[in-house]
Length: 434
Ligand code: G6P
Ligand code: MN
Image (spheres, rainbow, N blue to C red):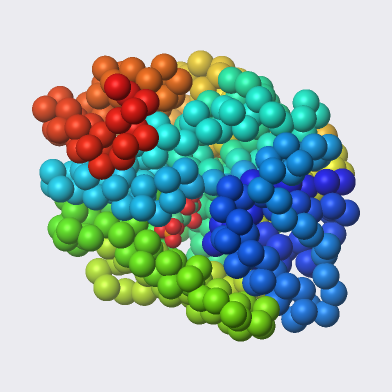
């Protein structure tokens, strides 16, 4: 089987390669990137990993997209159009108006999607007809919905956050996650865990009533989790605690911090593979430690060790293995709704548990959800659809509509000011929405 990794010079590619060194589903691996220097830098890290492992999973690199895609059975896509410079603008412009930007689920995600979706649709047109596309590109829900316009159900979106939440809840219950069944529902970065079954009943009420602490308890407070009767995805912090986040961020969004942090890693030259791997690990640990720092009141985020289960590499490989082996494994993925959430139409991409087999990812029915969750999902889905249409048509009116409908944007006036700020700072956007 052939795997093409689009965005092969990306910082998290070594995580995928680490997983590929352990399990060998592919006999051909091709890394593609538009930036040859980033590709070289990451290749050196992969060489370091292979040397450490004592055995190499052969890979090659290319800047020719069609070369990478030709004959691919699976295509992993994690690209960042506009780089971290773009992220700093996506998050920084709203923040300049006192509004939380957030690069995925906030208004920052709208701007990010506006420049990412055209590139993703171009890619989709060039993907071989039988390939499965596993999309990690953020904002993953919106991007997957756009991809599905071309690829249908061959495009599957993944995120590491739902499974991480489920693992933490399992640990708090003192059970291995494989023994539990998780009723998780929503959109990407906008989901809730509403029940956890172990064969005897729902264990969530008991957990929420107890004084057990886990990450979401620390983030949201036990009282708020009890009020919801559910465990929200960590990204819902940006909705439930929006102004606290703005205050904690000050004037420096995460994108601006990462821009500097990552530049240091990519700029190092003349390293041996071993040295490049050590530098990558140091940069990764620092990135992990500062993850969601604005929500933690100075406390450190946990570093996700390379040999721990989880991470988006584990999600991606689980999808590959379940499709290749027709395994019928249950994974929480971003797929077309069908009838999983009955209040949305069947083509809306949602994030829910799916049965994954060689026929693809089939979403499981979720059943009723609390009104407030339904309302937020419907609002954000409307925002996503306005954004996708704006990206496809280049309509400024639709882009402003998407921003103005977003719950974090307080007014139409603010939406217009934010869009004007984006146009001013992003020449490509200014050109596209002329
Ligand atoms: C989580 C999310 C990803 C997101 C990442 C951001 O893993 O699930 O979708 O890309 O966090 O991390 P960063 O270090 O870029 O802020
Ligand atoms: Mn994610």
